[in-house]
Length: 165
Image 1 (cartoon, rainbow, N blue to C red):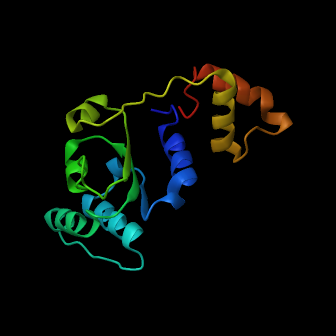
Image 2 (image 1 turned 180 degrees about the vertical axis):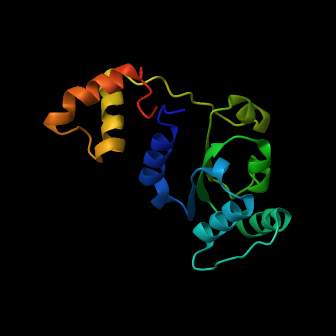
């Protein structure tokens, strides 16, 4: 954790979202109820329709029926079990042709079980990248103010390339 998986996923989403028919960024899936995540996926892609889901099984059915032919960009952030992917009907051909699904997780095994096309492991950040990410989280700027620069650099160095820690 803390390598910047969510940050990279957000950057990809922001850059490419307008080239898809539908889009959804499902953040912190591990911490949320599955029905809530299903409803968000459906709402994000089918706006302005708001589909209420009463059970995980109903949510899977709604996703399959309503989204199977749409070209979507879906970011599924912070997955920690297959049940979450199953609840979102995430499979190779879940959505229409040209769709892209990006999954962030700390568990590479889940991605292998799903049979994803590509697994990209984020490398540990270099000193400059770690400083920028820490600054963004702490100060909402790429670099800290002068009076905090040295402390921020020392903190980023101490975290060893994992500044969110």
